[in-house]
Amino acid sequence: MDLRFVFEAELFPWTDDKASWVFASLRSDDAAEIREDAPMKGGFGSVRVVVEVGGSRWKTSIFPDKANDTYVLPIKKDVRRAEQINVGDVVRIDLEVL
Image 1 (tube, rainbow, N blue to C red):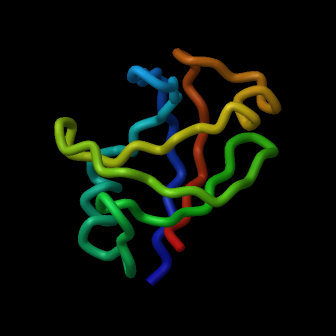
Image 2 (spheres, rainbow, N blue to C red):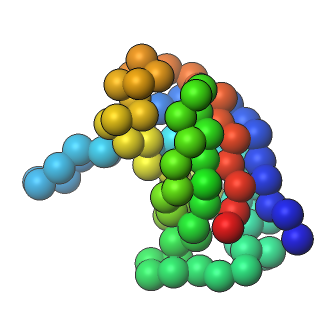
């Protein structure tokens, strides 16, 4: 089964004592489909994906966000720099579950 999703999401920050990350949330309907149909799940319920934002393409994992009943996608600093996107920007994301 091909699990591929194209959507727009706002980038948001998450910070803890040691580091800062930037994420985008998947739509809840897409998250439900992934929970049901994803072929393999890793540690912490993560799911391996390949992502495109603008001209950047990379492999990563999405992570469950139980509080919001979805998954969150980390957006790497190198991608944000290359695509000139920042926290608060709404970006088009093409995501395929591996």
